[in-house]
Length: 245
Length: 196
Image 1: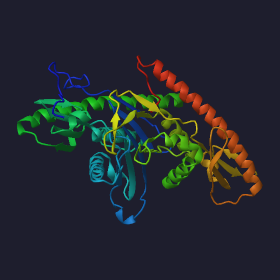
Image 2: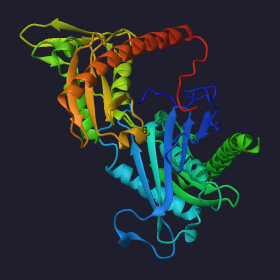
Image 3: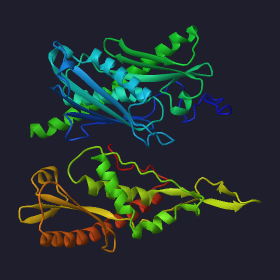
Image 4: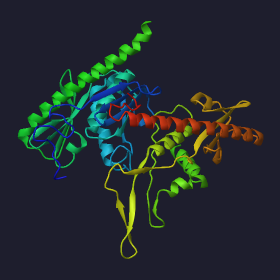
């Protein structure tokens, strides 16, 4: 990996992007007929599916029920074929459990949980192809799926992963840029109020660079929000077209 | 249920008819061979999972490219395997002998193939059969709670055979078409059929 250069001399990254450019973001809502809400998102080569069920009665143990708010049950799963090497355990390993917990915390902050006491909302996220920024893609997909399910939220939750390599902040890192000793910061925020709901950073980063990274991440989240919002509007106008006639 | 599907498919592929394809995965007899992992991810359950899974597996096997490996025998008795330098130098698998699963459900006095969720819910019993392209049955399994008369089973097996042979023919045609499209559209932006 020593010989791999992240940014070329002309300032281009491996996939031809500039350091402050997002990958091609495409999304589709309502991909599953059976789930209450579903969405599919592509951040470049990272592909994530999300299905949302709920709000419904608590499944499993009633003791988990919260008397004043809804219980959010998340599951983060990576398909065995999502990574370069076959992934033996799709879920249940440490990374997935950690991601599951982060997803739950993120959406507990965004969903209006007091509206559905003693109920449960399930969010299932499946990573079909992992090429960097997996968690951010999951958060974005889950946002769209929750909107598709009609679950009330305070705001969209948009997420972006930024990396730091060769003294440059890189927006929306791919797997190559994320691996190695490069620092990567994942930020999930509520774009309108600019509140941060999740902040996670890995590897080592000098404090002086933190501000640059955070600002780039915030910009990334705002850009992602614009795309997500447009996708929701397109989906709704398509759906209502048939209702009006 | 996942284990059910995987064990049924494993049984279907373990018959003598499929040995040809499996033998092609051998590198050096009794020493080295390729391990082939088949992972099926079911996204949505709309009835007739076994058939859909088997068709998907056959299509994926058709699409599989295995790198060309040459065995060079060095001194002593340990042969060395050499992977070809060219990343595009690969061979395909012969999927003609791979069976497809046809599930047939008995509803009332008649039987239906490719049952939807609702039809599955009200069927008496189902027969899950694996049919090869030339009409041979490699695996049969009866499931669900009802009982079947031997005569109905014979009828259902005949229907399975006919349907299975048709499915094979149509599938192979579609796969070849898709491959041609991909090859022709190599230069231009080829949009694969996905969710978008």
